[in-house]
Length: 364
Image 1 (cartoon, rainbow, N blue to C red):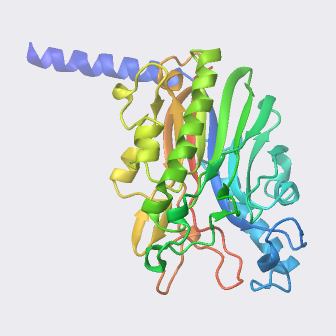
Image 2: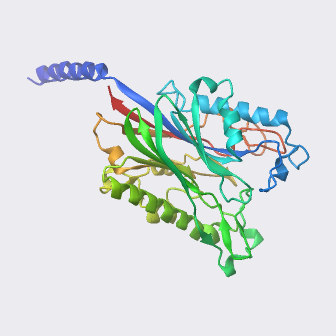
Image 3: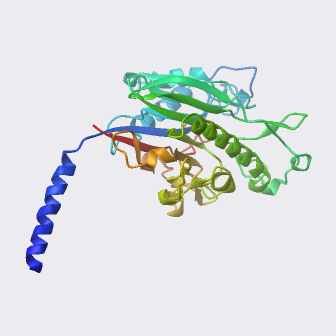
């Protein structure tokens, strides 16, 4: 009897496996990439871009700029191809100087046939670095988009941070005489992904300039703004499908993400109209997107709204997420072997961050 039961089990298993294999799914890759100082070579008097000019400290020539574009286009063309041969349908980007650099990027040979559209606004960041969104026009149709400013002020006691508490970063948080901190806007884009409404929020939260603890209130304010945007979308549609992505300058475990935004690490802990953060489990396993003082952290994150984790494959549903960390994106030797292969001493690299991505799937 036991032997017959085992045989029956394998017959049934083979039957259901065959049925599962017959199911076909439409897959879209959604990604985010901090492009690390994607500046052109033209002086813009409205921003502090002097470092990234041919005469600047980086000796940023047209040839170096083109090499940077080549590098980034190679990465973008390959993100997520392990499960989906198409490059990202939607890609959020950070640390880009202006719309022109995005126009130059999507014209690169590896990307031009993808016919990417561009959504971009100039932010008040003093260095002129912005966020933006690229999307494949044949799959995603924007219906609305706007930039939402983060208005924050530096407290008087925080103006002078101790040098030994400063983290080395070229992403400085600057304030004016009134203490207003000028940082990146949050970009909200709503549209139809193959006919289904999806909302994307692209973030680049305030840096850790001045030290993690001193600067934490700025990122908590950014998280509060992000939560306000998400709640407003939920108020319009309780079943809103939202993906908030970006370089948060905090990990999944920090207060800004865990407490203020309320992102949960486990699907079963996500309440209705809550948020699921698949990056927290990766962070717990030691996977990171950037390295500092021989320690990895996962600042680049993809967080999804509760309706995207419902097991309804007749509509687009979250499948899985990942960090794109191929070997060629890492330093091959020297003190920083294994770190992201960033721009270094005026030599164009890829980025000091690895890209992150997730897959949305829908049964065909």
